Length: 62
Image 1 (cartoon, rainbow, N blue to C red):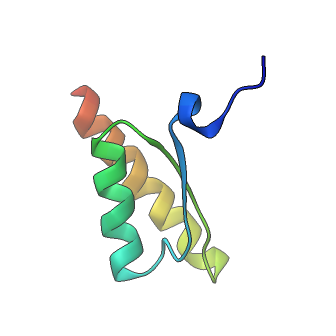
Image 2: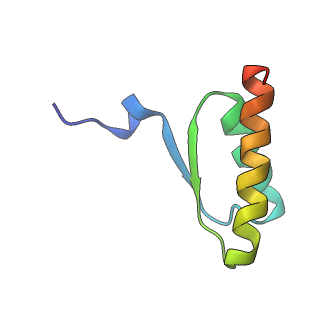
């Protein structure tokens, strides 16, 4: 069986380093989606990953 995006709940957010992209990603994470994103600069990637991990921690209570 081929796994579809619907069964994985995976969403790709382009421009995740921007204002709207970060808020959209945070909202999707709160709703239980797996989020992948694109960034213009790798400098921002670590910061965004930390925010995502913190968001997941809030969701699970960790």
